[in-house]
Length: 400
Image (cartoon, rainbow, N blue to C red; front, top):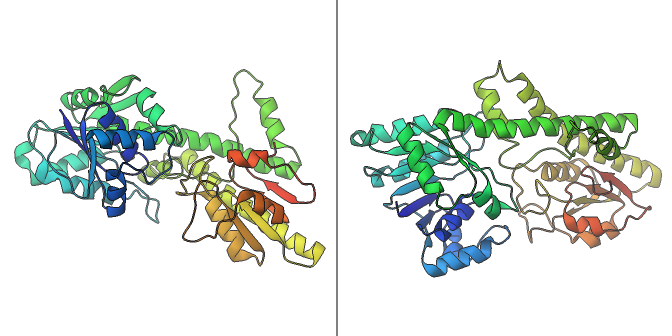
């Protein structure tokens, strides 16, 4: 197993392809975006991720990584494409299916096919059936498995290597074949299981985290009502040896936690009551924050007889990254813009431009603002000295 094709060169696909190429595999990265392909082939990257640019530059220069717009024959194929949800919160696996269809003509006996994209239970088996429908001669002659990523953006390269991985094949031989591939660069443990369990494991991990965050977010709203400093409260409660409450925020975003629980809820609506409630709580927190900001604008007008300047500090879904997918901060900023007459300054220090927002440097925004809405706890924000003359709404703990 020497040559591997990775379908999808995004936040997970590109780092994984680079790590595999660095481990000695001949890796071909496939992406439908020609600009992404060109950028990678120049030894550059199109996303923000520490140390990734250096690794991509090195493996491209060595010739172990190259990018193309269409797949080609290989020994192993990896699907690392998005799996968003539809308006009814059901998983959209069309990207996974499209990627699977694209490699069917190139499959041969003994090849490995792995889905890394977060997917509902049974997706791997459905893709196996799709492959065998078009290539019946390959049934029982391919190795097909599911192996979800579990990395933290901003620390992806380290976690790709050092985190444990759960690998589930459609049969034991498939599991072993996939484990053989990952063992070349994963220093964490490789936990073998079946495809369905591996799929549910990824959904369970993120649903658990979503529920824990929902508790913190609900607590923050209760504390606001009771005039209690939630940050102090959590710090004190966490002194208990068996309590570990997370930090609240303005909601939950990203490509995993804000999406994956709905895959369970949509398939098991009668059983997934707590998971659904947690997801609804975290979605509601973004609306609650937006309403608080809009009320502050109204109060400012009543007090000063003019519209305020509002600085929305942060757009990313978590601190110190450039990823805006499913970001509650972006949603809140959009609501403030559309539902108030204030001058709204948008700050996101990790990107240089945005299609929908005009960006303002964070120091300038703070100095100009009447109302500062802290949405993301980016490290540069922590250096801003608080000015008592400004109204500050801290939804992420910048001022804790």
